[in-house]
Image (cartoon, rainbow, N blue to C red):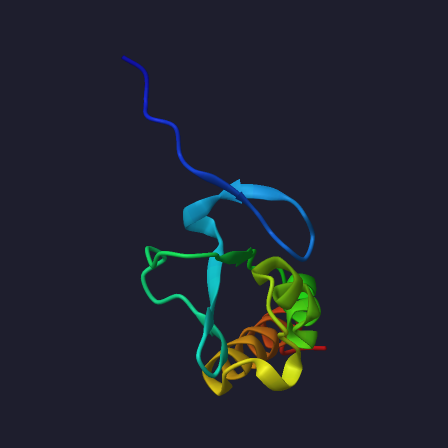
Length: 101
């Protein structure tokens, strides 16, 4: 028998397909869009890859809202999601600049 197939999902920002485990899952919540902690919650989910450009697009919230079929915008992202997105963008910006530049 061959290896079992890995689930493949599409990033809602760049539309590239990747293994489900390489993407971050977002779900609608009572206070807005939230990041899925386990990735196994039932219901509609949207995936974003770890590319900085995709996080920039996600910061606006509209791609998540469309994928989740909810009225999500930047104001409806839960604070933890906004913070995670901002942290990811800042961390990537720091890692792309060498200390000598």
